[in-house]
Length: 367
Image (cartoon, rainbow, N blue to C red; front, side):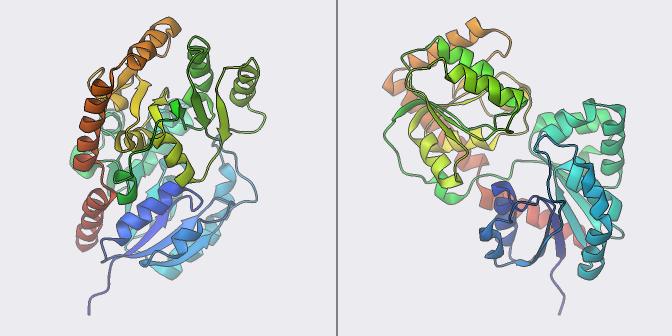
């Protein structure tokens, strides 16, 4: 009897995104999954319950930086190599190219390597230094296939690294059914923001906008790096009193979803992104997206049709966009919500999207 393809997933076991990735692949039903996590934080307990996940290995340094550049991962190559030799995967799938993807490229052996790129690993990391670009080029050269979260990223991979377009599948992995089917909630907040409090998220820019919208009630969700400039500036701004603001910090996923569902608008003003799951969640939950005017967001949001695109270097222009959004009538907002739910049902289902990825892995294993 033929064995199922043995797929080793290299990814952050503490991340909800890794949990969703594994849940989606598990639904395919014909894959044996193994996880190696290099995050010292505990692996999410839900991952151990996923039926197709046969083993979970946590091989990590005592501490890592949320800002990246965790070169100490390389000291654990021998331990990860022992796991690879023991499992003998036919496919290695790595989530996030500069760390897990690079490790996969170094240790793949005869296994086929599939990269899942999510945003900053292609849009930011290669541009930071010649060494980063070299790492990216090497990692892609060792890859059999790439799953890319957005067309913007796919085009960048082809143009900058001469990667074969036929070896790229462009799609975000999508949302679980319970988020897509989440019940309608009363709108207790005007805005929700749930991006991490790091420089790329432009939280301080959002707070400058809020200072000019004093009658609104925002919910600010998300953790930051302790002591970071971004977090310090944001907290100092909040201390100047933005009336009605709730500073919630990092929340469990289910609570995060509930706050977004209870907000009229979701704000995401990132400088760079892949295909934002936060924006997709908002579209499913009935929170109208107000997002930065960058190419990946334009793949999901058409300005003033199913959301709003905001300039990142013009506070006055951004405030004008926010005021236009706030002036929507109930019927106009209801129509935007209807459009967004239809888009998510068509393009944003974890079950359907990951079924495509699972079939791809099965086909690659047979080649």
